[in-house]
View 1 (cartoon, rainbow, N blue to C red):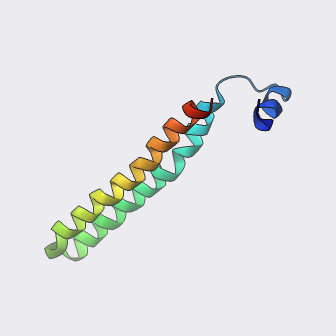
View 2 (tube, rainbow, N blue to C red):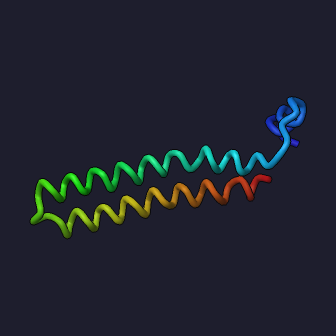
Length: 80
């Protein structure tokens, strides 16, 4: 057992620590996705003629943030 799991077992923590880890890992991508969409909507409102370029960059930023969430979902299952 790793030191963190031994500490959790000694302190009486029961349950799936992977679920807690994923919950904490989902905070960052959630904030990132909100910022990506919020700033892209603001940019489209300021410059409607640049909408295709802004939309393309918006979806690229969304995909990169979502990858972080998927990595956060997979890692607890790998290390458990």
